[in-house]
Image (cartoon, rainbow, N blue to C red; front, top):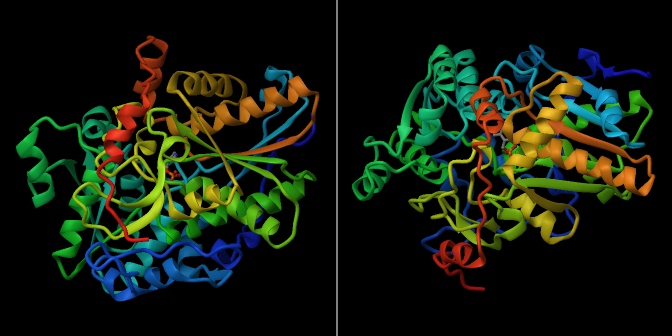
Length: 453
Ligand SMILES: *Cc1c(COP(=O)(O)O)cnc(C)c1O
């Protein structure tokens, strides 16, 4: 058996983030102010984000330096390992070579601290004392709580009600890092109270939790808001993943033909894929890049590419993205981190330009893939990551059928140690695969804002 684990020396950790905006063949559509329908300027975003992050949001510089204090924190777990999945290949009997980048080695157990740390640091530099945010599965909430504790920022997390109830240990982790955690919808905000007035037992959604966190930040001077996915600067911060993977693939002497990532808001997918895609856009090798999303929340595969709000109460600007409609409440399936109605504008744009592909799978087949992976490779993937595992396994099985020895790289974006109740439900046969017909999807889409062409 050839080498299994590819470790980069700390001195090789990337010093810059890669900004794909510099290499796009067509610029990203403007972000619009919902009142004026005019493009938003940096000042419009200033109540929510510190200026450094706003400038990154609109930057077209190819390389943006990673601040030294941020790199120092990253050294707690970065560079993250890349593995060759020899045993999984054998279990599948595939001639394909499967590699995975493992982001579960971070303190919070996923890729999310890659952006939580710089976001907290830029806010601290701007004198901000408190950050509000939303969390679905609890991964983002714990990552920002960890980051806040390092830079003396208090963190208030609005956790989607179903996950608050289903995942007490994620909440305990956030509290361990010193954050406070509120079930959303809550009675602390106008947006939360409006939802509770209609349905006191509302299960919550990421869209609602975002409204609550944005409302608090917009109405307090010393408070800003942090988002764990979707935005350009968040995707930017994740590109450290793909840049490391690129160096590690070189160490392995292989070059990926197919790159796979799961997509909730699109950040871990962008993280692994964008540096490789950037090479292609600058004239390098063409690779297949595959986004895998849950069939129960299929924004990229069945959503509409249109201007929409990022939240349910319509407090955010309008961005052009693949959306299921901001009022869409996905069912309480077990990959909580993938339950968002929209997709990152950058990922949506690349899909429209046919530079990436998208597929959707139901949760049972993803858990089946995750269990197969765990039994071969030892790591128990997060339910979200199981979508990437399923995508990679299906590519490997295609290679087997076609007799091809392609090189597959996927992002194993987090471990599932806090998600074992989901695995128990899978073993007990209690996971249902949610189907939508077109009429159901059309209903949430009928409320899209109308934007003059
Ligand atoms: C949050 C999360 C996701 C979904 O977010 P993306 O921005 O699409 O990456 C996926 N996997 C894990 C482990 C997460 O924590």
